[in-house]
Image (tube, rainbow, N blue to C red; front, side, top):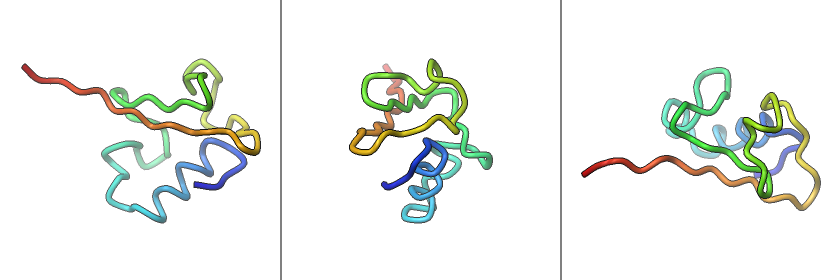
Length: 69
């Protein structure tokens, strides 16, 4: 997804795949507690707010925890 910030990427993801909201991010486009969003190798939680910049050509990965037994 294109975007200059993590929030823009997540908003664009929501527009393309609206069912993901509530499963990946909340209504404020904050990742849910069990979801990790990475820009390159950096966890967004370590970068600061979701308004952190995404450099051109960066890869944004969304990983959800897997649980079960």
